[in-house]
Image: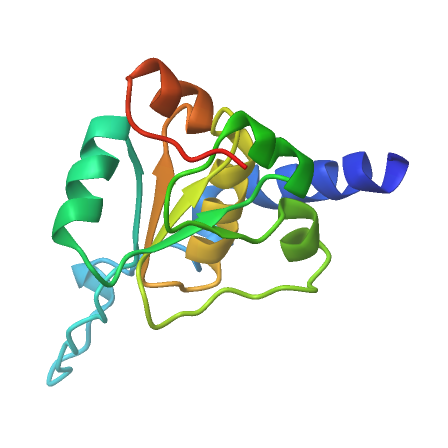
Length: 151
């Protein structure tokens, strides 16, 4: 259990770094440009957003390529899970035992939105092109009255 909290603390420190440090700093302004220098268009910025349960449901209906990743522990699935989601526990991601695909957009789910937010920040920092976090997690999904499956 101590290692679990140490892992969470380490991830928290990683993401508490200033944005300019974590993402490579600000782009130089025009006074630094040299004559004849051609500006190359930057690559598309990664998407990282938190979605309400209704926004997530609408996206699920529209985006067939969206991969649902539940980062809770296996025992937490008794609280219900979203149909089609895949279990990839937070601890496995934090320890580097599991990786998530970069070729599909991800919707991250946990109990109340904290662990999925940390994983989303981490994946975005690592350059994942499209990551979404379910606001309030399964708890909020349930309160909104959206369907869950139970084992």
